[in-house]
Length: 272
Image 1: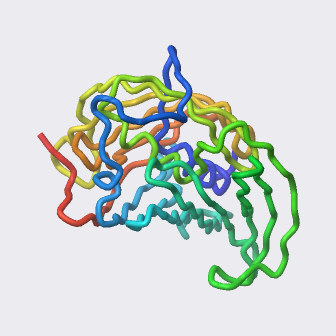
Image 2: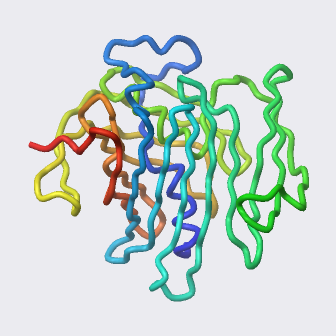
């Protein structure tokens, strides 16, 4: 597993969770302890995470959220890494329950940006996956090639970025859930186990432990190089439920994603 691909796969896995006795998600989310969606996204937020593997610091993931339930994530490797030059961008547009309503991904390849774009057709329960290429992030694609057409069993699902928001509203609940997930043009299932487990964790950006709620889980969706399986995540123990730290097991060990900077109106990590 090389460093660029490791970084690219980590974004969708950042804050997943799972359980054993499961229910399908798709109906009402009115559960005891459920946080309001607007409280989760606030007036928008700018979160910066650092990705590390053993003693190696690989790069950063920056996630920006808008009040219209859209979000963009920038994944960049550090310039100091030898033989690594990764720059990727992931977009999502969600509804008020954080289910995906549009998404696309782009990665810098030489002089152009290549990636996947998803065309949603909910009335026909169909999703078309297209491979695109464009000169920069602000121009339309000059090449668009259909790759696959997926038939949807359910129009309520999460994508590679919206999956980082979906568990935030449920961290104070005790209801295990299973949600359809699309990643790299393939569908699978992600399981979340919400136990309302309150604890603390340390991050380098603060000199005091952060109060968090821990979740754990697994996914059947396969990322690049077959990355799939178990993970853990820690969210701030407050109404914002900001992802503080995430851990993912890979073939070579465990990768960690940690919050290093944040900009959210009136918010700071809750400490002891």
